[in-house]
Length: 429
Image 1 (cartoon, one colour):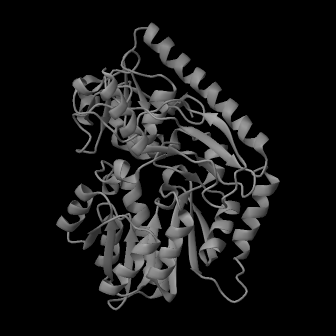
Image 2: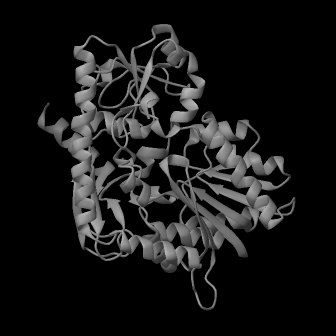
Image 3: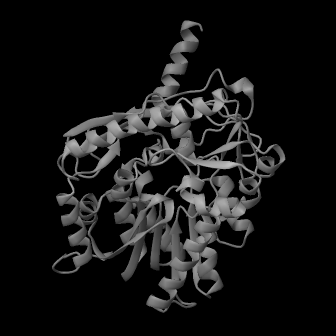
């Protein structure tokens, strides 16, 4: 590589990646890295051809703990335009997510008595699957989605969608055109933004004075308890506890009215927020959860150092299981091409020497290659056509759904391997 080309490449990388040295919730510089997952490709940067393998960019992926507000976060920030302007994840494909969306919408319609005069805005609305549930109930809807290809899918399905990134400054433009919303929903997007307080202030401005802001985030407690380290990738900037969420909401002028634990995405928190009341007090269940977190050591660095040690052990156990199976002559495939699967594959150094290919239901990913490890992605029908002896469940959070869909595979003698929290065969649990 010539000096000019190398310099241009370095400059381009610096435009895409930067490293934080302060907490994105409280601004403290008391950050301690407790787990380094190594240089990683972007988890959704699937490759179209083997010709792209050699020039694949990688970026550091370090997980840090803030001793001031207890937020767990990654310090390596990728330009969101690189991550989200064109996207491959589609929410409407998973039956589990579809059912969760339906239940969430039904509960809000019933609780808030939503009707034709109300507006529900979903930020990072993806293909419009959630909003379609409200639309079917006769409620006005609006999606805000930064990925142009996914937003177009939503509009094609009859969901009005603005293609844009949302932040605090964007709220005024939305309300000028559509009015303020009875409900603002932000599912699995708060963790993706580098300034979450600004984002929530924008949600508050978008909602009516008495409106609800409903957010959903993967829960740090589940990540720690279930060793869900594969959910760490560059899109997920923050890993929220209730303790850190309470401080964040206070900075954004919001009060936690209710918190609910839901099983989706490996375990999440669903919060109902409103503009802060006169006393600004949070609900009892939220305060109690924060107190339990303190008792469980969520404010102690040593808790996260133990987690990191368990992660290293998981890698050795999983690689050992796959290497023994390969040595015994067994064929191994994988199921799913989720972003988290690419963290697992790359951190555990699982490539085509151990796993031949993966299968997925998402047509946007079929025919591509996984970032970093270069597994070809085939359609789900390939599993029965080739009948591998073992299949590594990369989408382990959908294990029940997948096993139900793939009963014939197991009936023929195929076995699924669940990698998290400890490698095991699904039929031996």
